[in-house]
Amino acid sequence: MKLEYLVAIVVILFAAQFFYGVANNPDSEFGGADGEAADMIAEMNPDYEPWFGGIGFEPPGGETESLLFALQAAFGAVVIGYTIGYYKGKGEKN
Image 1 (cartoon, helix red, strand yellow):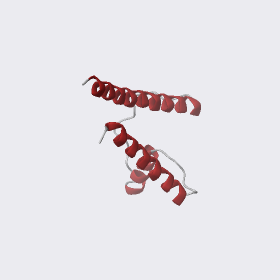
Image 2 (cartoon, helix red, strand yellow):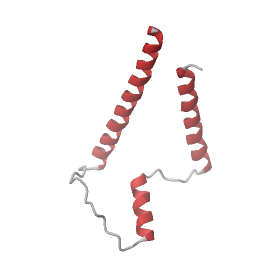
Image 3 (cartoon, helix red, strand yellow):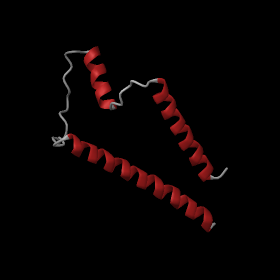
Image 4 (tube, helix red, strand yellow):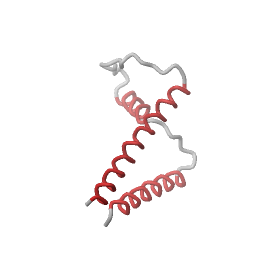
């Protein structure tokens, strides 16, 4: 099976899983894993104090945080696209 078909199948399965989850939980909120983990830790141990305070960078607003998240997603897409293109080009060369 060619790599393109395998990648297409993975993308379709991921999209199907996403839409299945959204259809079964229409009132759900999409929160981050950090918030879920903090809530779980607070529930398990209310006296817990983090041993590390972060790197000292706090985005100035929600838009900046969204921008950084979008840049992270774009960078990931570029890396995935480059990798797929690299292997496709390598396959055509041989």
